Length: 153
Image (cartoon, rainbow, N blue to C red; front, top):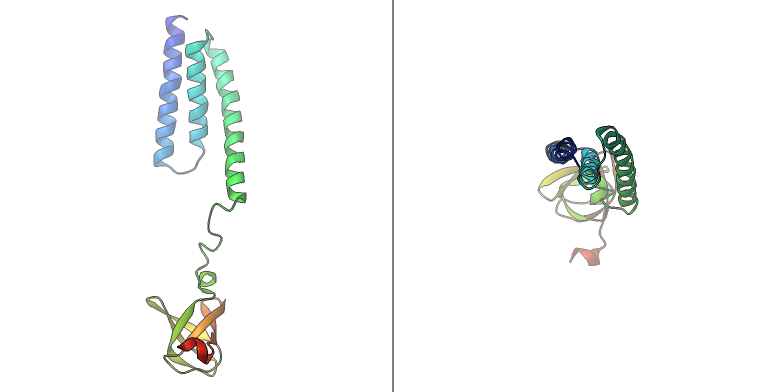
C-alpha cells in the first residue's frame, strides 16, 4: 500500500464521520447509510491495495446496498406498528373516555371537560355535572352518551 492509498483511506473515514455528523443535525435518515458506505470503503482501502477509481466504484456499490438495506429496515419497522396510529388524531384518542359535562347538553349540544380543556359536545340532553362517555367525534365536536346510573357512583 503506498502513501496515496493510505491518504485516500483516511479521507473515506473522515467523509464517513462528516456525513454521520450532518445526519445528526439534519433529520432525514438517509445520510447515515451513505456514511456507512464511506466507512466500509475506507476500511476496504486500508485492508486492500486498491486505487481511487476502484474505491469510487466500491463506494457507489456500498451506497446502493446500504440504502436498500436501510429502506427495508424502516419499511419493516413501519409495518410492525412502530408508532401510535392515533398520534395525530386527538379526537380518536378520546373515544371511550368518561368526561364531565360543564355546560348542560340541551337540544343536543353542550360542553364537556376533557383534561384541562373544554370541548363542544353533542348527545342526549344531560345536566351540567353529569358524567358521559365519548363514543365518537365530528371534527372537533365530541359525540357523547350519558353513563347509566350505576356507573355514575
